[in-house]
Amino acid sequence: MAHPNHWTSNGGRPIGGRTIVFDLDGVIADASHRQHFLAAERFSDKDWDGFFNACVDDPVIEPGHRLVGSISDDFCVVILTARIHETREKTVAWLSANDVRHDWLILRGHRQGGPSTEWKREQLELLQEAGADIELALDDDPRNIVMLRDSGLAAMYVHSGYYDDRDDGVEFR
Ligand SMILES: [Mg+2]
Image 1 (spheres, rainbow, N blue to C red):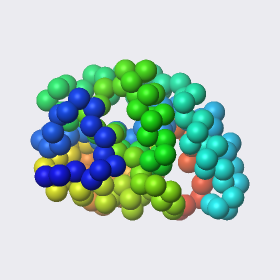
Image 2: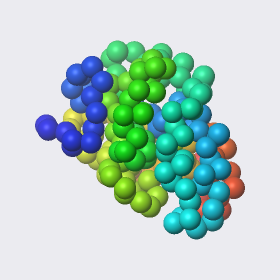
Image 3: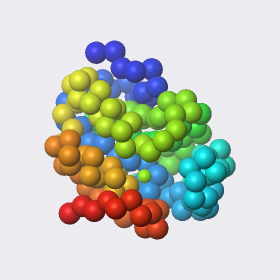
Image 4: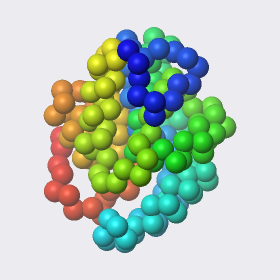
């Protein structure tokens, strides 16, 4: 199946088969130094450009980096991130510079605002339609963990602390 053109291959492995999906920020990339760009309460007041452009300076999160690097070649590794497509070049360079194991990178479309959860749900469905058997997905946003589990997928929560001060009323076990 043809894949959406905002999906970026790393190495030419086809989509499909046993698949593990990793979020990027807060799981593999340490975005804590740029969270201050999002301090404004109102969504439209947040400095999204500043937030995304600073991604080049992210350190790796060592446990996440080692974990993704330990995934066997039996699995297709997909990095599914709500970073906007404008960061594609920076993100690809960062993944390469830090030798992050992955087969596909999925970035959000151009200037799509709003919470990432619905968008991620759609991408996961597209992955499944393309033949991906998603055995596990890891994310640091509690809303995405709820969405994953509601979708019948095995989800692993990674605590980044980025969402600790948000009162979304989201709880999960
Ligand atoms: Mg994240």
